[in-house]
Image 1 (cartoon, rainbow, N blue to C red):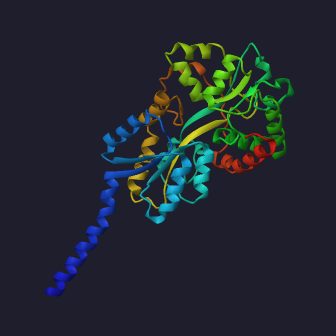
Image 2: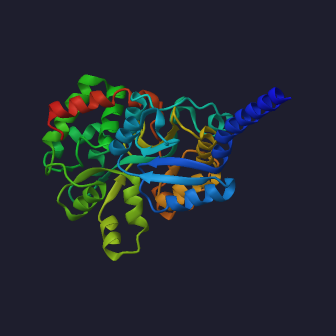
Image 3: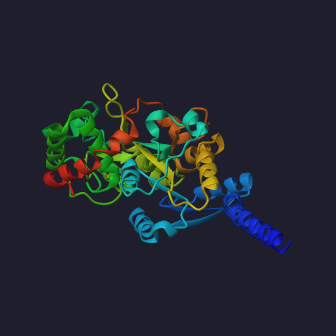
Length: 341
């Protein structure tokens, strides 16, 4: 009898211990996020409302979060890593932190070229061209390649070549045009600078409006933010510039993405998959579009954003995002040699 009680006690303890992870997975999620947008608060609150899963969030820059994950090792509490741009997600993937996720819902809702087996894109931004019509003609800036043409000498503004947005564009140029042409382009671009690279994309747009330069590369959501602003100075900026969707006659406009993946060491894997699937829901996709001026990746998601509607449809580059990530390091080396810093 005593032996039976001991065995029963051991069995119950084992079952109890086994049940703990499942319970935790149903009640909380640890999110490491490099997205710092106020509108995401509503996104997370809605997930908790729908699932009952509490989100514990740590926000920091990508490098800080990846270093933290690496230092925490197998004991990391992180379940999901969220960031922007394929180059950053590729860097995280190279560290081997992601676990493959099998989800029919994600496979059905997210286009194949915008996901890998380890991480998924949830929104996109276009890397468009803005120009000052008083300084540059529209036909001069219809492609990214034209920005390296000597006719634009002293007229190009851009942010740092080491920024992931530009590195991803460089990676796309390598994939489409080859390494040699991409390096020639980078050298031509540098030769056309109106000033040394500085500031963010909003600064480039404002510099074009002010006539400090004739043309610049900028992410669409920065422009959409200005377009939707009720500030008189922001409206004045958008009134002085024009926009081009680059490479519409070739491979299409380059896009950046926001994405996420589940960590191999995630203590709450069930909750992590639920969160990744939630990000692909129509409701979450609407938050990306209407709250932060990004395009949803799910075709059925409703967009109710005046700026995005005004910018209109365009042909986007359909290169698989995983393939793009493979040449980011090559783009950095090319930019370094060209003096694009």
